[in-house]
Image (cartoon, rainbow, N blue to C red; front, side, top):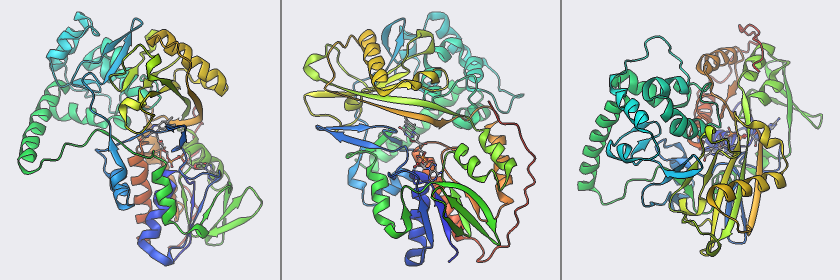
Length: 489
Ligand SMILES: Cc1cc2nc3c(=O)[nH]c(=O)nc-3n(C[C@H](O)[C@H](O)[C@H](O)COP(=O)(O)OP(=O)(O)OC[C@H]3O[C@@H](n4cnc5c(N)ncnc54)[C@H](O)[C@@H]3O)c2cc1C
């Protein structure tokens, strides 16, 4: 079997190596190189004093099956836990300094129920009227790649953009709604407009169809529908750990930084920071796009330029735990989001121990504050102690929490979140074409067609499949058709 080197031991690289290992068995000829001493990349779970703290992601979507299926395949089926059912509302929105319940039935930007919107004190009457006019708004016929902000403003109005869609949807990508591409981040809404014209009408049809399916399912099964967010009872780190346990330890190298890539005859020569090199027939990059750019710079500067055009932003999470008896507010929900117009330093706060079980001892609560992203990236430059102080100050002013935390941890994620800005899909197609000029080179991971954990797993699985389907000795050509592109700011 031809040799494959996978660069990057985050969930994308691990999924690639795992799929190669399971499909080729004992003859699987791969090596996984990870620059840090930790497997899992952004997935990192810490535990201390009965708390389970997620430094990076805390859950994955169940709709996209790759993560749930992989957990089951790895024997983690009994560890999968859904988000708790809370009395509605599950999320709050900070508006003029006060936490307001998100109207029931909001599906990100689109309402699925009318009455809760009408009753909501969050949206003004002119704002509600503008949302109602959505059913008369025509399709976007001119702009195939509209920004998230432009789409929401056009369909639902500025107020919904400012108060809900901006902080919630752009918040998921730590992005700027004026720059994020709707088609690359939430294609479901672009498709809904194409099919139904109106999101409100589309949502109603969808709800009706789902109700029909649910009543059919209820007749045949007593199982509860799956929760939207899923995690593992011992924390998400269980997933990379379970994959690592299936890999051959001889084929996984930690603390092994790749610096550059050149051709040596028909093979790739992978140069490591310790001065040594490895020869391989296939190379899978499961690294952030700007890291991949540096590695391929010498091999193909035009490809490197395109990879660098994918912008990344920095974020931070601060986890704080308090004694339940010292809080005056009920944490009845998953947390709150903060619209930019509020002028606060935090973007959102998850009430982690309400959202998921097994996160804190019974007499305590755990919450997680989000800082940074495209609009306030400079805040992440501060050190951990300052980030913790900032998070405490913000929770004091927003939630009235004056208690001293029993636990406080900050995680800084420098250049961690890829931005799928307008033009992203064209850029990714160009990158794909440039990579095709290098047989045996593959790109996986969060930078391209989905940054959620299930997308990353799927990208790793798909990459392994392509490698396994290769003809046994493909001819090499290193010519790239790509022309140089300017590096994006
Ligand atoms: C704060 C935060 C919260 C998030 N929350 C969620 C969530 O709740 N749900 C969800 O689905 N997604 C979430 N995401 C997104 C998701 O976590 C990531 O997109 C995903 O984990 C990325 O996986 P990856 O393997 O592609 O990249 P990474 O995890 O970045 O892995 C890349 C690996 O490459 C290694 N590496 C880098 N350079 C080199 C080199 N030169 N040589 C060798 N190795 C190298 C790195 O050390 C790293 O281990 C979140 C992201 C962040 C930052």
